[in-house]
Each structure stands twice: as structure tokens, then as C-alpha cells.
Image (tube, rainbow over all chains, first blue to last red; front, side, top):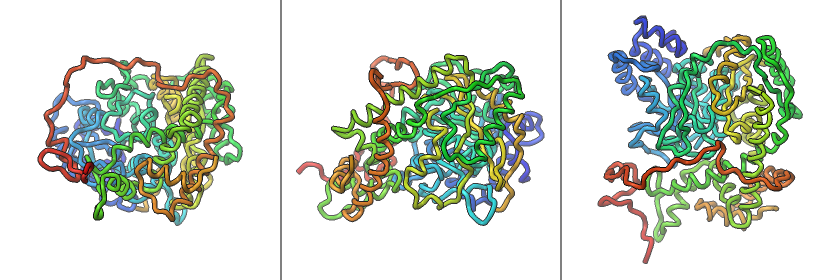
Length: 490
Length: 95
């Protein structure tokens, strides 16, 4: 029974079509795995009754969609109708949306089954899933007594997919929140071009950077799931009105003649040898597959993180202004004589965790009178330069860019607690440029480090060319032949 | 530019987040660490660069200015911590 949850989406789809398995069987297998995986703290709101109801409907359906009967997990950032959706924050305690996010609705329309909601960093602010009101999600990979982070912010999604609690999961990525956890857990995660997936109904963190994407067991599954998630949505004014190609059909594995850029600025000082070695390995794999490698320069790379840490908090401070204890979620108990200002201040002090408060206040500061030009406007200008760096190399004929996904393998939960907040931010050093430039980026598991923990490589594509990017990732995946799985301890 | 406890207090108030007096020095220290990191942006030559407004070159779509939604008072109020007689209820705002 438990073997069924190990299936990939494509395998399950084919087995369902042939009648070898039913959606109810698949769903029950996943629910049993979820029940036995409390130690991972990946699923935080389980919806078994709803899942079985959806599975039965899928089994009865005649004209089945691309994900008919496939059990998935949904990140807690997505609003799901009638099901708790609280962005892993105390301030949204008890919130049950009256509506369904466009992306999760698209998945349901394609026939998918929702198993429940997945752990994450509070409001997607974090790189280790340690800022969640539900407590830490735990990486199924383990090499000693330490519990490791699955990365963040989509840590629950990554842990659930890596541990075979579900066939795939949704994630969101504002600075690396799909790609970093995917790399830390040995799975595949793609952030599409800004505008591919509708943001409607996804709790907003930084609206100009946020994008949803799939987290899956391989590249083919990422193509299938992304296809179902994206598409134009009139309810999101930044949603792209462009046709969505058949991503899966574009997976030929043929990348002969493709030009892959290797950015010199991504050789960071103090980067572990193993990451350098993995990157070199990746270059060799793509060359062997027939691609042409060229050295490129993205000169403003070093300014990406500081730019991000102006723009993302600024947008967060505006977006999170809505959590005021009036319309939804938590409201503080008020004392004698407390007025509306005290209500706002106490509610937000109680409802937001430390990292969220810090970012909201940094955002407030950089947007305040006297600093708006020095910080916010300057960051928007540097962002334009970062984007231009990419446009220049694409204009030179580069089809995709290969980089490491993360500067290290997964670290231990609690190991960064006493570090400067900036040290945690460095996790996103290779991924954040992609959000600032609005480009598609994918993390593919490519090897294990000396301890036996997974490491990922990132490919960055041209805007709107996710199909081509997925195909390059597919070639890399085939060459890397990564099949390792975490040994079950939970 | 260094942030002192007075600035930290002011920012906390602007953000409508209550911060206890004894927590302000630590908060100011964290702000300084983050702002020190951001300070690198001052060395970039941004002469003549337009601040980015949209990451993908697109015109926002327009639509007719008509009502497209409404009559959902119950749903709108369903998650309110305090709703009475069809309204959100808050502490007294005006005397």
C-alpha cells in the first residue's frame, strides 16, 4: 500500500488511465504516510475527508483532466476554500477563506486531490522553515543525530515530496523559496516567469517578486504540474495573457547546440569546494549532452541580495498592513481605555513573529519620508540594472544559465538561531537574482555531498521559455542520474 | 546612518507594532545590521537609470468601470474577529 505514495505524477497518471490503480487507493496510501510522518511536521492542516471525496469524484469522472486523481499537498500560503489558510502565522489563526486561489483552483479543475496544507516559514519569510507558527518542518534527509532544515520558505512542501507523503506539492518563490528547499531535499522545483501563475488568492509577501510553482519528484512531473497551474487570470492584473505551451511535450532531452552561460560572478569567495565541484560536474554533463558553454558576466550580481532586502520588506510592509485585527484572524485582548491604535499595535505585536516584524519595520523605514529615495528608489534602479545584466547575455545568444542552487547543503535546525539575520539571507544568494529579473529558474538534484546530503544545480531561462528550460533541466537530470532517497527514520 | 532607540521607536509606531521599551536597543541593533548590508547599494552608479516599475514589459489591462462583484456581506464578515449587525466592529474611533 505504502509503495503507491512513492509514484511520480506521470507514473500514477498512466496507472490510473490503465485502471491499475484508483485515486482512492493512491489517496489512502498518501494519507497513511502523512499520519505516520508527524515527526516531519510537513502537513499542518490535514483534509482527509475532503481528499477522499475528491478522489472518489476523480475515479468516477469520465473526461479526466491532466492531474485527474493525483494527490497533492498545498502550501499554507494558498487560500483554500473552507480550509484553514494562515500563511504559518498566528495573526491568521482561524482564518478559513471563502474563496479558492486561482492556482489551487486550476489544480482542482485538472482533477487533482488536495491532501492538506503544508508547513512553511511565516508569510514565506525565511530560508529554514524555522519561523513557522506550527514549529519547524524537518528534512527527511539525515546523516547523524541532528535534525536538518528542509529549507524555506516552502519547507513543508519539500519535506512532503521528498518523503513521499504526496506525489507533488505547490510552493511559492519570492527569493528562492521553491528552489532552495528543493535543493536541500533532493527534489525538483521550478519558479516560472513572473506572471505565468496567477497570484490571486495567494497570501501576498512581495507582490513584484512572488510566483507560485510546483515541487515534484522529477522534471517531467514539474512540467505536468506547472502546465496545470499556470494560465491567464483576469483577477491578477500582472498575470500574463500568453498561451501556455505543452511543457511535457517539449521534454526531448535534446540540447545539442544550445548555449549555456556560466556566470563568473557566481564563484563566490568562501564557497565550499563541494559546491564548486558539483557546478563543474554540471558543466561537464551539459557539454557531454551537446550544449556549448560560454563564460558570461552578470556584473551586478553582488548587489542582488541588498536590493532584495530593500524591495521585499518594502512591499511586505504594505501588503501586511491589512493584518490589523479588523477583518480576519487574530485580535488582541484590549485593556481599559485602549483605542483603535492600541488595538492595531497589540494585535500586530502578538500576531507576527520576530522575522516578520523585523521585515515589516525595515520596509516601513526604507519607505519613510527622507529615506524613500536613498533606499527604495535606489534599489528599484539597481533592480533595473540586474535585469539588464540578464537581457544582455540573452541578447548574446545564451539560452540558459547554469549555477549552483544553494551555497551549502541543508544545515541543522537551530544552528543559525544566534547568527546575524543577514547570515540567513545569504542562503538565497544564487536564487534571488532570478526573482528580481522576473525570470524562470529551476533547481535539479545533481549529487550528494560528502556527508550524503543532496545538492542541487540551478538553471535560469529566458522569460516565458519554461518549456525550453524544462527540457535543459531534463537533459541535466538524465545526465546526473540522481536517484538517492532519504532513509526512513520518521 | 546609524539607528538609535528613538528611531526604532518611531519606526515601530509607524508600522503599528507595539515594541516594549526594553526591546528597543536590540531592535535598533538588528536594523543597523540590515541597513549596513543594504548600504552597499550606495556604491552602484545609477546615473540615468529609471527605477523599475514592472519586471515584465506589459501594459496593465483595462476593463469597463462597472460593478463585477458584490452582495456577499456574510462572506466578507465571516472571518471577522468582531462583526455586528452586518458591520466590522472596532473600538471607539471618535469621541
